[in-house]
Length: 87
Image 1 (tube, rainbow, N blue to C red):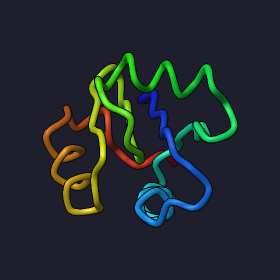
Image 2: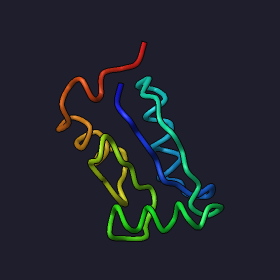
Image 3: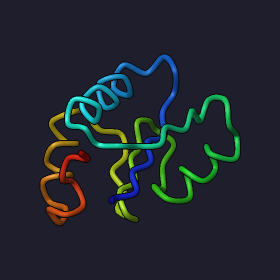
Image 4: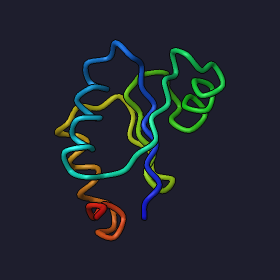
């Protein structure tokens, strides 16, 4: 099972789109609101080298400041066992 972490903010439209996409594709993920968690914000900056949301980390691979089309491309490039839908 892949480890998917989504760094987001509550009023971020792209973050809402990313969450919807992951849920529609039955991909389990942990969401971290960097607007409420300063330590998570710092962690996101360290991992991605930037400060924009959404940022997603899948088994150590990072995609930052993306839209759904970029998310689809990112997930498609990962090993198939990483992004197979969870039963």
